[in-house]
Every structure is written in C-alpha cells, then in structure tokens.
Image 1 (cartoon, rainbow, N blue to C red):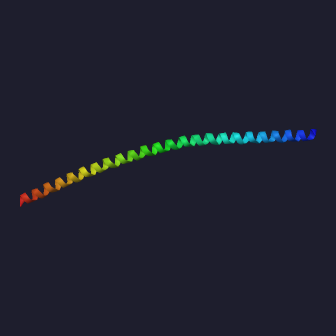
Image 2: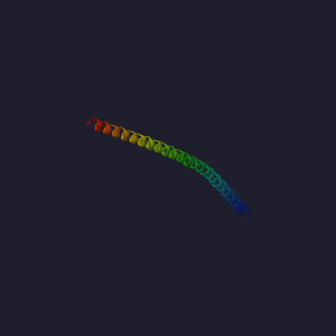
Image 3: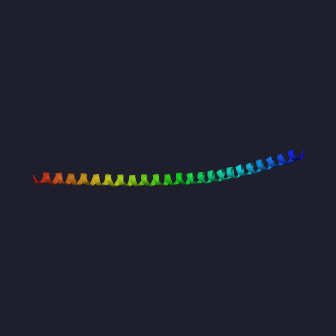
Length: 87
C-alpha cells in the first residue's frame, strides 16, 4: 500500500511539472501573439501612411504633367500664330 502511495505521488508530481511546463509555454505563446498583433497593427499603419504618400506624390506629378502639357500647348499655339503672321 505504501508503495502505491509513493507511485501515485510520483506520477502526480510528474504530471504537475509537465502541466506547469505546458502552461509556461502557452503563456509565452500568448505573449508572442500579443506582440505580433501589435506589430501587425504598426505594419498596417505604416502601409497606409506609405500608400497615402505615394498617392499624394502621384497626384502632384499628374498636376505637374498637366501644367507642362498646357504650357507646351500654349507655346505651340504661339508658334503657329507667329508663323501665320509671318506669311
């Protein structure tokens, strides 16, 4: 009988230790997931900022191109008028 109590105490101790190890790793995993979630939100925010900056740069370049096109059109019209006036 005494031998059975020793064996059951030993198995109880081993199972408690194993459960503590599992609980430790689960807690570490939970902490890692929290930090990963935080990092993902930062990445999403940075991606949104970069996307907005690219959109603004694209819009600015389009405005410059439109302005240059208008300027070229005016210069071409002036040249055509000058050529017509010379004839």
